[in-house]
Image 1 (cartoon, rainbow, N blue to C red):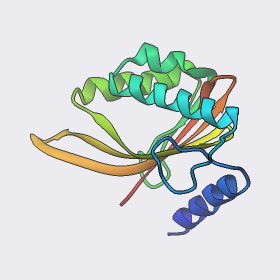
Image 2: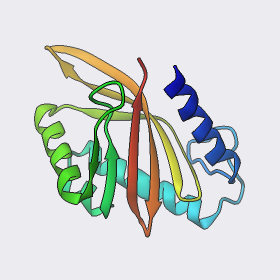
Image 3: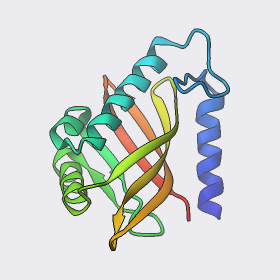
Image 4: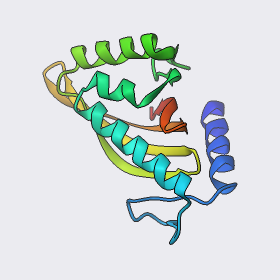
Length: 154
């Protein structure tokens, strides 16, 4: 419960301190978003598309050399992976173990160099259709994803 409150406080601080931009038509959309917000949103959307194609090379081309991925597992805090080699290894294992995995976007918005993406992760688990809801917080630097911090419901 405390971790959720802290996360919500951090997200609120980030997005109330800057103007945000959304291409999904959600509330708070700016008429004239900053170039940085537009670029951030485009980079994260390209990253997400490569991810759903299970294109590890495409995903890694969109990540910085010193990238950070904070996984949702193991509970309660998840593992942190740093750098191209370690993060690539996570994606390769994920896609090999979950060939039908797909992340559906519920909402995506950007503010400056930050982006939040709410998602539904869908796959087959134990022969049955399965899903999990969560959120990723991205940081973009020099046209690439520098951080992808992932959180799940439940």
